[in-house]
Length: 145
Image (cartoon, rainbow, N blue to C red; front, side, top):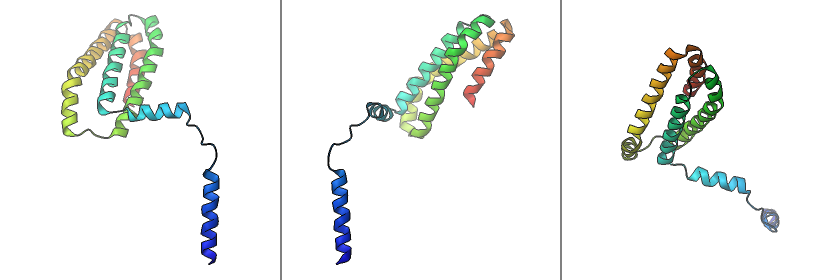
């Protein structure tokens, strides 16, 4: 008989604790949950290409040491975004063969062209302004870490 009384007391305590005003969901938490559920292989690939394009545009503006210094905050911001994209990719896991093929067809050419443009810009900067290149190269290498 005693176990039934204990179970009844526990059930009553749980019921009483769950009554009353419901805690409103934090809007920040709600927004974060919505954003997380919106992350797909497609959205992550699109974000990746967009960030590469922004990086390429930023690098194209570098002509000397002063413009390299001016570009550092934007490059740092883009590198942070790239690391977040990498985290999202890891959370999603590998795409199925069908999705991977579709993504490669949709984003592959633009990604490859933009990466080639970044490489050409870096090579050009290396010959035209080695000091600026050295500063930017350190930041760019942090993407690979």
